[in-house]
Image 1 (cartoon, rainbow, N blue to C red):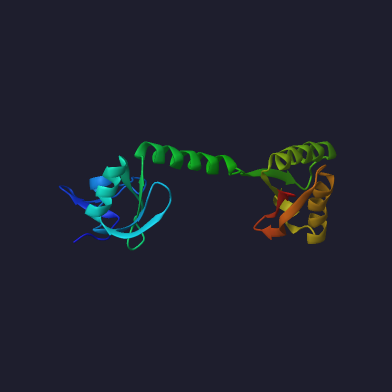
Image 2: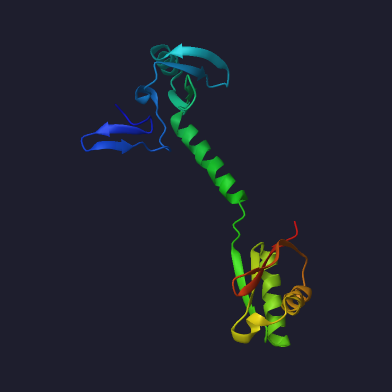
Length: 187
């Protein structure tokens, strides 16, 4: 007995099925299926042999579109054209995705004004590119025991200098020996 439908038995035991693989014509295992013809019309639930016969008469393939439903959904279409359309849709979705990563800026309590300006400009560049910016105020040695209001004012100092619009995704909070905040681009 199979562990579930995502596995099949071979000579070495159970092997995982490829979820991206599409079953066509004789590879379809279901005995009954909901069939959609080449024009998009729903033909209803048909037996496998009947659906294969309709596909053969049209000179096209029977493609299993959704195997997770009961009964599975199959479409009568040209397999090459169907595979091209699926890959085209995947490329469109991938192109619309915005890849953003979290960039990190580390500052200390003793940082000079010029260094803060440079780091603020870099943060602005990253925000304009659509990345998130995490700002860490490191506290070493004696600076760990300074007044919390003073340390927050140091963090506010760099936030005031950043020359572009942003929103604070995570407010300033103390984690271990540092203060941390995360900024995002205003959309």
